[in-house]
Length: 227
Length: 70
Image 1 (spheres, chains in turn blue, purple):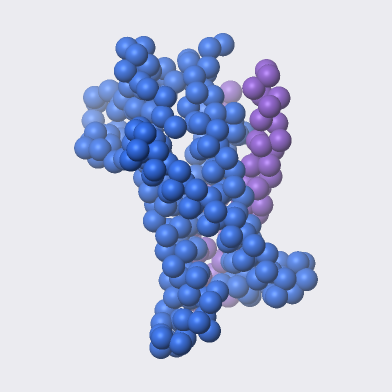
Image 2 (tube, rainbow over the protein chains, first blue to last red):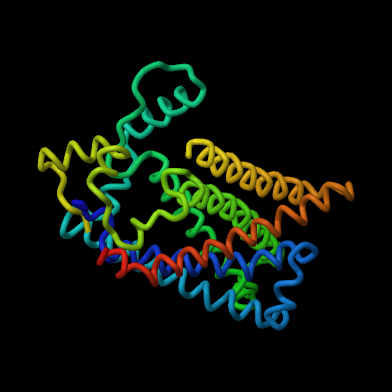
């Protein structure tokens, strides 16, 4: 069966490192926010100091993935052209698609469902929400990690605020991951696992069914492979 | 097949809903003991979800070349 490259090697690598890091960050970070419910995890890992050490090692992995994404794809976009950022940028069509999808779910429209391009509005919304959450984690996490240095020019209550923001967004982010997991594991189309993000390729038939607009662009020859 | 697909879809949606509700209840710090049991179960399910995701991620990475060869 003919397959088309959907994700570049760079994208699959960033996903692997970023996803692994953030999942470890959840496992080691959530017990700090919910010690009553998840106190068994630090006990299993050898105490809170070990848990925090693993949390910080995973944070370094997450930062590397984030910096690589921004620097490599950002520079590619500016100097070479058409990177991942070009494809995931939110357009007016995405807002229209979201409204039309909403109408379909609520059975308010009998029109045909939206024809998705390479990335649907859901994929773009997921990407930008994770991206903005990652930026918040980076700022608040740095303040918490280097708290003594920050205390030199920052009142202590700012630290407490940073801690609350860090924990609150972690909970929001876990909810986002739960949704993402539902889409890639429990959605009958992808059950048990959507392998595209690992291989980078997607069967042409699947593209035709799920992303008709992208398929049309590919057929016309308008689609240029993005790095 | 359709029935199985619907079962997967709805059971997945219920699990995600339990996670969301338990986090909301935890953030609101509801004192009711029944709610607290629900919160404990929900947050542990969320963590189980995260662990399953790590498994799925590693499975996908390890079997990547095999799938390409297929």
